[in-house]
Length: 505
Image (cartoon, rainbow, N blue to C red):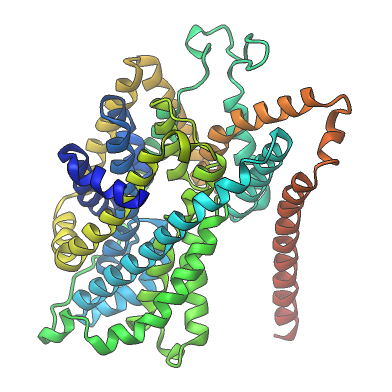
């Protein structure tokens, strides 16, 4: 019934419906531009949310995130360049199909798999968020601090290729969050005598610097003269542009399995779509009857990763709505929008702002249908249009919009300077393989973690021993220890296996 009311809310507001449609269109286009991620687009558009109602703002950005994940498959299939990291595995079979003149078939496969995977994840979000929220109402500050620690360590250990660099990125974000007023004593700290830092760093210039400006710097440093020229091969016959019923049936088992993998991965804070797509591709290829043909241009090789990377979208919102802990970069940005409009995320949100939450769920489902239609009928046209626009025009325009967005949030040139500084920091983080996503998520999480820790210590005279007396807290403390241990063990086994192969050779 609440979900039905959410649909009624969306359809009864022309403004909200317009933002949902715009989010779907803009998300597909942004995702299809190589190097411009949905996260970067959302970072630039967050200032708009100051001037529109909460549901329209959240629906707009949420749908951009969903459509952007699918949009990445367009450039992956047509140009052998993933628009987003989530589409990296789609290249393996997508571009070979384009070289065979089957680009239309590949794009339709990606549209179908993305929509089904995303729908699966959205259903899990709708069913799971409220259930988990009912359980978490019983938790106190010690349990919440343990959840924050669990999120920090999992994000740091899995979001980067290096555990050390991932954790360092997370700690950097937490340190940035410490700038500003102490939540207990109300004394300014780490402000270096600058009145502009009295309230700490603003989220918007931080986002724009780390995601947008750093990407522009990366693209500017890229030597395009060495890039291959990719030319789309024309279809030999009409069937090359169509997905047959038989091919769709062959894809369905892989779509189902990919959606399941993506949904599980989405529940883990910070893991993300890039991991889900490769796990689904590897598992699909291992179990497929034609596994030896994967990588040469088969529709199943597109269906599995596309279903997985889009299925991440819904479940990654569950930690945010049920616990107040963002599970992804986009969820962290949406948390910022909730805060802008004075909405406290966490277990109570279903009681205090249930109409907005279920309206957001409805917007997500509508967005899936919209980007499926856009992808099925228009993705080839979008790809060709993007190919005709030189990068020399795209990225200076993005940089200009980024500066305007950084200034608009608080009408502050200081924020523009902060965005530039973090753009440089973000560029070097990318170059050195540190994680900007881990930094942003930690920046958003740190204030809540600090508050939970200090409240916990005030509740007990035993200091940190209060956590030992809480079984739920101990479980959450143990989860990241096991996760990091398993990752280190897997890496040691892989290194030993490689060493044995070298000795044998």
